[in-house]
Structure formats: C-alpha cells, structure tokens
Length: 612
Image (cartoon, rainbow, N blue to C red; front, side):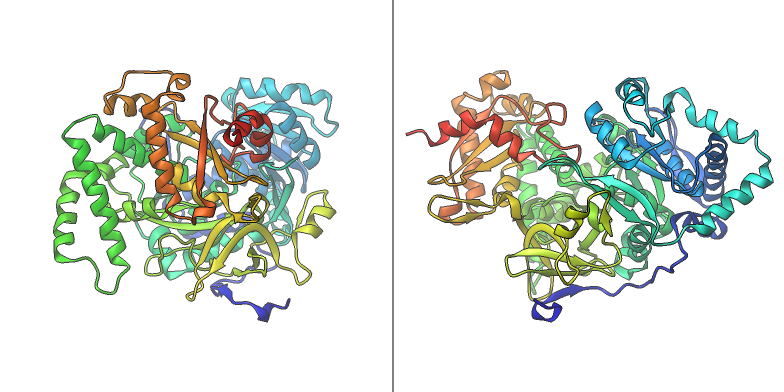
C-alpha cells in the first residue's frame, strides 16, 4: 500500500531541526536569551520553600558538573545509567552528560537487579548514578558481572558535589573549551539516549532516540500557536511527577527549557497534593490513572458527608453535561449555565484549590483517558487535552489543543507528525520524531517498520472525517471469542477502572464462549467507600466475597458494557484478592498490566469464570 491509498492526519512542522543542532546547544541558546529568567523552582523536602533557579544558574551548574564528568574520564559517546526518582538532580545530570558529549540511560528506580543488569549491560554503561543507598545495594553487585561498568555513585551521598569537585581540579578555561568542542561535534542524528521499553511481552528493547528526535518535539510544541497557549505563556508553570525514566517525563523536562515554563520536580507522589498546592502549576502532564485518582479522591471526600456527597454527584453530572453541550452547535442552555455557575461555587472551585488553584490545562498520555472523565474535568474548569505517543516516537504523536479539541479522541497529529491507519486498523506513524532503531536489535528494528517506512505502533485505531485519531486497543491484545468475535479489551477496562474501588481490570475471553474479566480492588479507596455505604470495615479478601461489594461491581460492569455490543460485553467476572503492582511484577514501571503474566498466573481464576 502506498502513502496515497489512505487518509493521513498531518500538522506541518513549524521548525526544521538543523543537522548540527543538539540538546546542549538548546540550553546554551535559551540561557543567552533568558539568563536571569527563572527556569526551575527547587525544594529538597516536603515543607521547604520553592527556591528559584535561573537559566544562567542552571547552565552554570550543568557546566560545572560536565567539567567533573570530564575529570572522571568520561569520553564523547560514553553512557551513564541514571536510576532515580524524579528530582532536580535528574535534569541536572541529564544535561551535564550531554555537555560532556555523553548520554544518560534511564532506569526506573523500581527496577529489579536483573532488569538493571540488562539495561546497563546492553547499553554498555561505564558508570551508574543512583538515588540512594538502597539502590546502590541493588546495582553494586553488577560491578562484578558487567565488564563495562566501573563505579556506582549515590545522589543522596552528594556524589554530584564530589564529581563537581573533581572538575575544580582542572584548568577552568581549558575544561570549558573542551566542553564547547564536544558540544560543537554533536550532530542532530547522533544518539541522545537509549530508553528501554517496559517489557510487557518480553525483554525490554532499547529505543535509540537522537538529538533530532527530541529537539523536534520540544521545539515544535511551543511553536504551535494553540499548544503555545498551554505551555509557553508568560506565567506557565508545570510540576513534574511522572518517573523521568519514562519518555513522557523526559520530554517535559526538556520542553520547559524551550517553552520558558517554570519547572518543578515532585519526587514522591505521596506528597503530590501538598506539592501541587505550594507550587501552583498552570499545567501538568500526567497519565490517566492520576486523573482517575483525583476524581475518586474528591468523590470519596464528598461522600464522607451525607450532605456533600449528593451535592458532588449532582454537580459532577452538571460538569459532564455542560462540557458535552460545549461540543454542540447551540452550546449549553441557560438553565445548564446557571447550574454550572452554582457548581463552580459549591464544587469546582474546591477541586481546583486542591490542585493548587492555578491549574487550567492538563495533557494526558500513556493510555486512554475515558470520555466521561474528560468531560468532567473540562466542565469543572480544568481542560484535559488527551494525546498519544510512544517511546519510539519521542512521546507526542497526536494531541488535542485549545480550539481544536474532541474529547474521547487523542487529537489530530502533533506538529511534524504523520499519522495514518493501515488496512488491519493499526496506527502507523512517520516524522522526524520517530526513532531510527532499537539498540543491538536489527531484527526488531526491521519488524517495527513497513516497507515504505511507516513505524508500526502496535495500537489499533481510526481517523474521523476531521482527521482526529481514536485508539481502540492494542493489536496484540485483541481477543477472539469462540464465536469469532474480535474484542478490544481496552474500552471495557478503561471504563471499569473509573469506579472508585476498582484498581485494575484484565478482560479475558480468547477462544472462550463469552467475555469475562478479572478485577482487583483499590486498597486505598476501599475503606472510605465502605464507610460511605454504611458497610463495616473489611479486608480485601472479605470485600472480594461481600455481596454488596459484588453488587456494586456488577453495576459498574453493566455501565461499562453500554459502550460495546452484546457480543463484546462482560458476562461474568472474578474479584482477585491480589492487586497488580510494580512490586509483584504484574505492572510495568509505566503502570501497564503485564497481560500475559496475569493470564498465566491466574489461569485457575479464569477457569472459574467459564466453569458450568
């Protein structure tokens, strides 16, 4: 099939990346233009004030650390592992390595020793920088098994200060000339990093991303007039709390430098609400689960009161109705506008204060958000622009924008991206943001592209008449029932996860007579939900067999089934007493369910669904 045989969603790139450009030069340019402008607000602990760091101060720190890396013996092309939660030192180290001509290779702090071993060995890291002594103990034994690995550094032991001190032993002018020379020799097509995929179906693949790949997305985003309204207005601030080992967070950390938005780091999601309230972001980028948690927490808090609970539910429906009416030619009715105005005073303002009071926009990626949730937040005054991308596409490939938004879709193409749908429904992508290859894996690289150069995402979807893209599921996860019906589980799973006490859902039914589901319970939300329903406290094991809990889940399943045909609907389900987490290896670090492992380990539970 040729490119002209199918419709293509395309947005023109505003900026072309020059062959000799790179990420280090990006920071240099913006520092020259904005030397005294605040780039980062930093705090090291909960309760501390956010201290401003200007572009010049950040670039000076980057250069000082780069001198230390050179004194350490790091050469152009070397790779250094970074295994840490999201924090200021992550961004600092990332750019210092680029200044030294090297590359940072991210490792999730939740990774096991064997996972870290694969990434460090496959990428050929010389050093690894870890956050704390616990992670040092995880990777230190690898010094004896990985030939290239020379030393482990610990951020909490002030290793970055020690490395900077090494650089102070060099001739300052000579070291700076060496840094400038190394930066000048980095080409746009040179490797900037290797990010290892989550590995839901096997050993993680190393995605090579070039300086051009990352520059393309971080420069063309703010250059788009509509996206500019979110990320680059004079008072723009964003709080980064996703793991920086994830491409989405890495993209945001670089985007802030180009956009001129003030960046903050929130290392521990347990403190996220407190950090949001003190930092006061104007926009955030997050995965759908974060928005589900915010809604469910607000719902649970309101339902703790016999008065506030009904009020919240009523005005949640008003917000959804108001947002849906915005998409009609006539818009909201006078009655709906009046109800919405009342809801702002009683409910929506409280929700916004919970998130810092200044949050107006959010961008959601990493999975389907859900139409109802999207309408609720927009109706409450926080518009979520759903987007889509993969590690292989340097994060963004499509995104909704102000003035160009369809809730329930993942938007039209990101600037410079081409998106189409193959004959079998698979989404295909082209553009300067698409990775060139998998590291040390030519076979996987060949399999990832069509003969005419389109990247095969593995996701199924469709294009509407306005060239907005909708995701319907994963190609490898399509279930074929015994009756021959093809079912994409994502639609059902996403809707069911919206229930307050549901944590995870895995839809089953391959070669079976009907569709079933495995459901896990949210241990954090369960106590409050039980109390609100007038039920006594109970353990997860007790709740999994409680008739009233089962009845509530049954109603949630019925609501989820409204989105699909009868042949695709869930007929029976089982409640598991084991939740899926990163720790028990049923979730990847990017919070995707390892479906194959779940299907294997819970085979007996699945059999009970189909037992006569």
